Amino acid sequence: MTVLTQALPALSPGRRAARGARPRRRLAPYVFVLPAVALFAAFKLYPIAWSFQLSLYQTVDGVETFAGADNYTRLLNDPLFWTALKNTGVILAIQVPIMLALATGLAVALNSALLRGRSIFRLGFFLPMVTGLVAYGIVFSVLLNQQYGLVNWLLGLVGIAEVPWLTDPLWAKISLSLALTWHYTGYNAVILLARLQTVPAELYDAAAVDGASAWQSFRNVTLPGLRPAILLTAVLSTIGTLQIFDEPYILTGGGPDNATLTIGVYLYQNAFKFFDFGYASAMAYVLAVLIGILGVIQFRVLGDTS
Image (tube, rainbow, N blue to C red; front, side, top):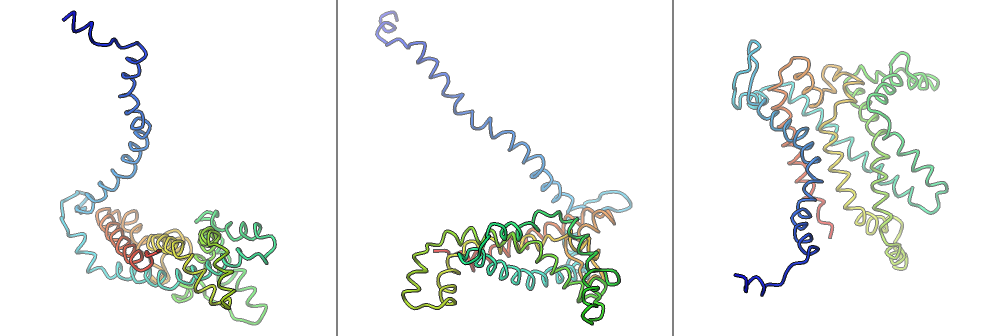
């Protein structure tokens, strides 16, 4: 044993310390990540799991009873749920494309070298996004008030009769769409502008040499270059629209006659007005599945960015 010990090279204190430090180095990244993972698990994963468990229960005479899939089948026979889904779908199908088209045109304009003071315009168009949802909802409810609103007062100056912006089902949808467009168009334009600035100028020069018009350059150079950003803004706008709550709740409360009742508002009413948390949780999971399906469709349609 003595001979063997003498034959082995002795480790210096420095090498022994380095070897002992290796396991600690391997653990260091996990130690730094652990607080974030713990917070995510406590405030995201646990509520999601608890919500799914709630969706399997019903409150009967103040007692939680296991209901299985009853809350989900109840959705299929709930006319108000289908009304809320239809209203949300109408906003998604009409307002979102208009908003993204305006955002695209705005991004192209803000990227033009002919526009002076571009930084000021960019800031101005982005400012609505930093306005609080409740704050701008209240502002729009005041502006669009049928009797005392500024918009109807201005229309009266040119001889146009009062418009029931918030009390007529059709005009209420239009008012909600106008508020959403005002708030989010600049945000989407900034995302599109950031992508547009990465499109090589040589492509536009080559198109000009080939005799392409401004529209042809836009269609064959600008739009293909914007495709990843269009996909991003479309997915984000879809998610946001399907979850919309603040604007219809502040502007109309879901009325008139449920004309602006969205899934978010109806979910809120069931959870915090009727205290039917199981049904509201089931609605939330159906909404999550719907968002996932639409997201997959959008990636299939717009996702090929090669």
